[in-house]
Length: 129
Image (cartoon, rainbow, N blue to C red; front, top):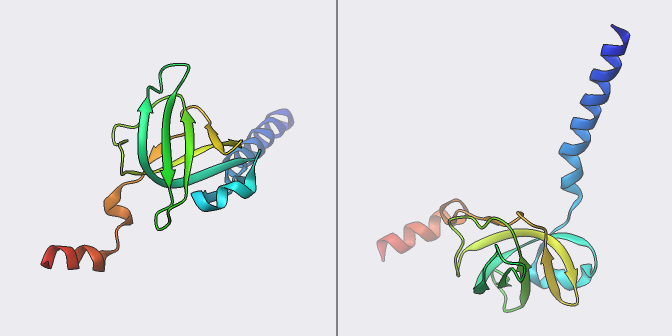
């Protein structure tokens, strides 16, 4: 019984640690990324250009831009690409900034749902126009 309780306690501690370990990555906009050269970051922005294939060793190469700014950052990504991915879509991707390029962690690309992140007042104004 004591051994089972110790094992369960260790497993519970490990589960809590893994749940919170990922939250230590800073979430940044493109304009903030340069200050984190060589560090693991989570970058969010809008895709402005996209070429290549994420299934090849060269990877998918795309450019991200701040939501409200003009600064851009190149990203190299390999892995699964969400169905909703396209130019103009808001995305979040994890990776390490190396020489001004984000080397993305494989399979970390996530697209944001535009309807969830649109201001309701702005949407209502657009419908009445």
